[in-house]
Image (cartoon, rainbow, N blue to C red; front, side):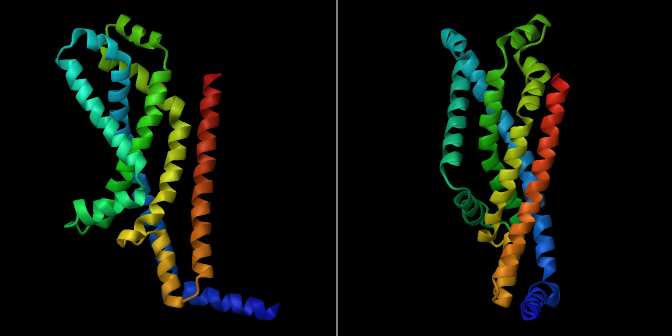
Length: 244
C-alpha cells in the first residue's frame, strides 16, 4: 500500500507539479469558460432572430399568402434561408464546422479563440432557435391579440409581451444548452486552441502518463457541469415559485 501511494505521489508531481504543468489545466479551464460564455451569447442572439423570423412566418403565412405582397415574398425568402441554416448546422458535426471555420473561412486569422467562439456560437444558435421557436408557438394567440388591443404592432408585441414570457418559460432549457455547449468546446484542440482538453492532452504528451491528466480533465469538466446544473436547478425552482 505504501508503495502504491508513493507511486501515486510521484505521478502527481510528474504530471502537475513539475514545470508548473497544473497551469495548463487552469488556463485551459478559463479559456473553455470564456469560449462557452461568449458563444452562448452569440447563440442566443442568432437563435432569437431565427426563431422570431420562423415563428412569424408560421403564424402569419396564410394571411400573407392571401395578400401576395412584397412582405410575403421577403419573409418566404428569409424563412427559407433560416431553414437551410438550421438544416446544415444541425445536420453536421460541430467539430467539422469548427475546422471549416478555422482552416477555410478564417484561414488568415490568428485569433483561434474568436474563430472558436464564432463556430460554437453559430452552432448553438441553431439549437437555441428551435427552443425559442417552440416557446413562441406555445404562447396563446390571446397574448398577441392583447398586444394589438393595447395599440402595439406585431414587432412591439413580440418585444414587450411575447419574448419576456418565452425566455421565462425556456430559461432552464437554455441553461442546459449552455452546459451542452461547454462540453462541446472540448473539440477546440482540433484547431490548436489550448482549452481544458488540450491542456490535459499536452501534459499527457510531455509525461507519457495518460491516467492522471485525463482523469483531471474529466473531473474538472464534471465539477463545472455539476455547478451549472445546480445553478440551473435553482433558477428553475425560483421560476416555479414565482408562478404560484
